[in-house]
Image (cartoon, rainbow, N blue to C red):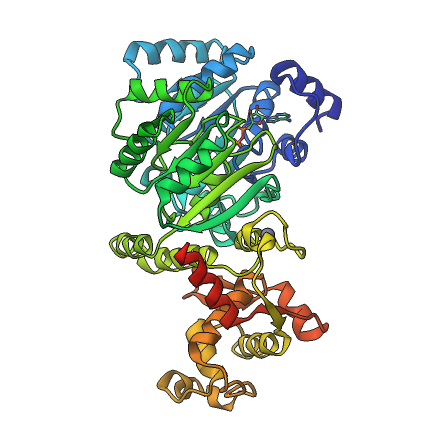
Length: 515
Ligand code: ADP
Ligand code: ZN
């Protein structure tokens, strides 16, 4: 056991902070108990300290595996400035540079060593030289092909636990739905890891979706109303980052394009200018932002629809890390949906990618509190509407949809959560097709209990039930619908459900499209 006072003093001495953020202390304590740990925390939540602080106090050397080679130098410089003996080893270094690090390791002069998943062979050397106190896997979702940022090199990390079974491991990520989370633990061979899941709610972020008409005009107006606030505009392609930046510059806005095709040196300069507030607006592909530590980004705009909710949430999470109110706007265009569908169809794992895109689209079309949708996507259910999204502040008309909800939920219950949305609707509507007859669903009590509601209307209602957290889609089980704990309240405890009027809903959507 480690004394709580020691942790607090170390936090103050090396990082300058007086108190721990939520979960940090319990994670660190668990590391000291020798457990494997899986940490799910939103961007900006403070994951790094969860392994950096133990690294300082534990005997030996902590290895940090990170995909962000480009950022290692900055991270290590930051740590060294704080008096922490850190270094990195990767393939971008000369042999001499590597030799110098090895010699420091041999002398026990390194407490924290960053390396890339491609460079694991270094570990054998370190293991023979020093005690390895902890292995930290940063951006751990990269190991899962179910995540949104799969990196083949990460698949090698599964062997670490087998090779160094006695070394505790800590895996950290900002993005993981329940299934990805389990996949990470399995792939890393740490099935018994303690899971620490921080709340993903970022109350200070206002959520807004707008139709994509006249995007540039809307954006210019938005920025002109905030002359001293900096922000990021995410675009789908390199080309559009450049054209958007160009149009903003023509409107006398201090904007610059940023993408992976820009030279390394120039990219660092852009990052610096942005951090120092000499550049107000960055028009970027998703390449921008990983590891950028700027706390006063006041807004994030998505010029295009993101391809899934994980990515979207991570990107808007770069706004308002200081906790002050910040705006996020997502521009929704059906053209984007079609393009993203094509991307998804040419990717690996087509079905999962398409289902995730579908959820993204439903979020954009949503008629209920957007924050509820986001959080329920990450398995976090909130009962109150947030009051800080465009649907909450400008809601559609609702009616008492309890009976409709009960019918849908009991249909899902009768098939034991083993069917996707289409089959559930077919059951409710008493369809006569081979799936129904093959599985004998015509004998279910719920068969044909709601023929009066059209198929597409059912789709809308069930989507609303998903968005309100009564149902969830199991992406990795053929997109089958599952009941959530909320659903049980509706089925057994008389909980009422409000649904948006479909006629009303159509109107709202039409209005939005016109605007
Ligand atoms: P993540 O890796 O989860 O995105 P970081 O570890 O980069 O987050 O931390 C985000 C920011 O919060 C950093 O500027 C970090 O210094 C700061 N931070 C972390 N822990 C604390 C704390 N206990 N008190 C105050 N600030 C903290
Ligand atoms: Zn809301």
